[in-house]
Amino acid sequence: MSHLTRPGGSRSATGATGPGFGIPGYAHPLIAPVEWAELTRPGTPLHWAVLNVADGPGSMPDPHCLEAAGRLRNAGVRVLGHLDLAYGARSFGEIVSEAHDFHDWYRVDGFFLDRCPARASYLPDVRLTAATLETIAHGGHLVLGHGTHPYPGYAEIADQLVTFRGPWTDYRWSQVAEWTADHPPERFVHLVHGVPRSHLNEAMRIARWQGAGTIFFTDRSDHGERIGRSSPFAALPGYWDEIVSQIGPGVSE
Image (cartoon, one colour):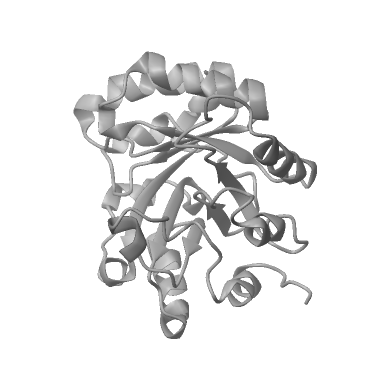
């Protein structure tokens, strides 16, 4: 587990030299072909993209997801398998089994642990899970999807922590935990939905002030998610080109 610790609490996270995007999971490639194609577009500052076949890896390899994941990896994009920890309710065996399927079928470069517990009492269990996943992915990238500021000890067992996931109405008044100042911005991820185009610059400033090096902002709302439809992060935001140009070298039309 050498990649999980580093003297002084400093460690490489994204491997990138600046801010960029983390894609928390687009819809299936058949439903969102444009979204998946955009991830290989030159000039896009992309840190990673999450592959979620069917609330996990599915029951068998999906040829469309295999193709999409292959194109991303050939373009140098890090692909992470989606594992749902259900805030500690799922068993260790279930999680490890899904991780093996993701790695064997899709050759993922690491894992995104969605709904990861944030309390100190769960830290030993998540530490064990992280160590096991590191073995499965041969030192792959690990993101803990807490969605809030967790107990500080979680920062020692993963490459990145999602310290905010939610609506713009909460994000614009959010506060950063003091302990995050001990780590570089590349360690933290913010995923924000419902960000109006008119407030995009303000959202970018908040991410910089709070020290988040990986972001995903969208103008889509969570209304569909609440009534059992798709996640607000399942498709491109309406201002995709604009936000790419703000944090990257720009894209060609």
